[in-house]
Structure formats: structure tokens, C-alpha cells
Image (cartoon, rainbow, N blue to C red; front, side, top):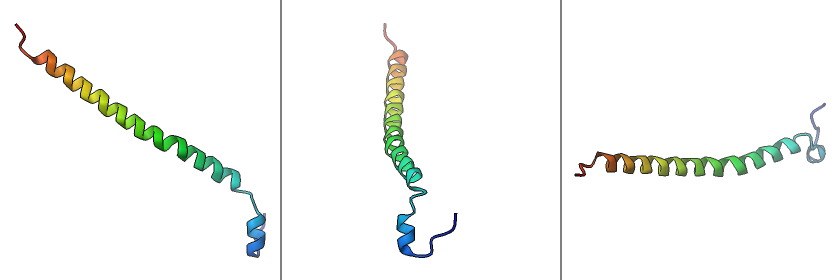
Length: 60
């Protein structure tokens, strides 16, 4: 594949279009998942801390 010689040829070349679309779709799915994962992990850590606190209280 030869590099495009002009801007018009470059705009007609769609060789990397599918790759860019897949990368954008992956980013649109993965970034919210990372945020949700961190949020759930923090909630789990808080719950574990609460359970540990309740178990360490000196109940009669």
C-alpha cells in the first residue's frame, strides 16, 4: 500500500476506519466498567470494614 499523495486520496482511504471504530467502542465500554468496578470495590471494602467493626465490639 502506497501512502496517499494528496489530501483527497487520504480522505478516500478507509484502511484504518474499522480499527478506529473498534477502539472507540472498546473505550466506550471499558472506561465505564472501570469506574463501576472501582465503585463496587470501594463499597465492598466499606462493608468489610463495617462487618469487622461490628465483630470487634464487646457485646455481652
